[in-house]
Image (cartoon, rainbow, N blue to C red; front, side, top):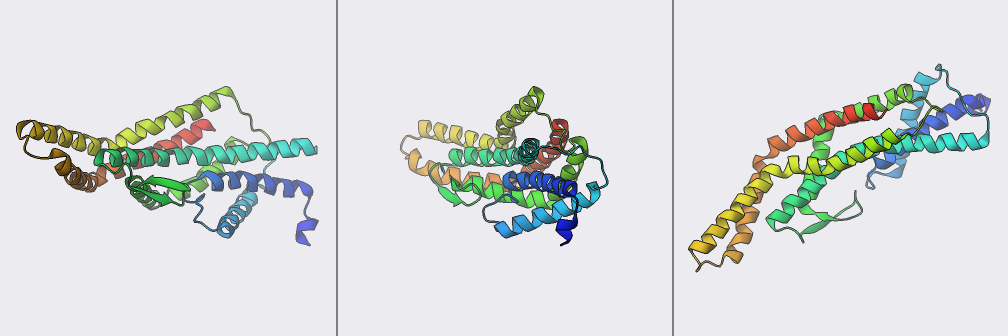
Length: 255
């Protein structure tokens, strides 16, 4: 009864907030995971929408006066949520790409596991680094930063005032190209170690031809790669923290 007694403008405002938050829950890593129950996602989206609605209900918004404009604004709000979540997913895509590069150098090119988050086969090193990145993500309270970014988005990009321009898409493409840079930064120490290992094995094969270097190389590269993963954990944490910090700034530049 309380719902039907509310003015339609307030219901519209709540729907716009809910749609923007739903876009984030669809594309954001961890929150958009297929392993997270749908009821949990819906419940969290409704709770966040209600809290933000209580903050914004006294603000002035120019709400649509026609049905076509209403659905057009809903679509724009969903795209805004997609952009916020997609920009964060790019960071984790760089982590996964780094894991694939390292796994390929270690000889794990065909050692794949099923990833329920991605819905397909991924490298075992990529999967391990992704789970480690999620733990770092939670330890740095980035999920709290997402809520702050989401709240600020309604002031920086008000409802019904969303405009998609060419510089916006250019910035998104630039962020997408940074996946490869991030992957190199994360995997550089281990890739360098494995490269020197390959060179050393090649020198051994030339100086001592009696050694079957192909059989020796597999366990050696795996052992050195695993040791390198353990040694480079502080560097992994440092680079990922910088990437998440830069993501915070890049999202505001998108706004």
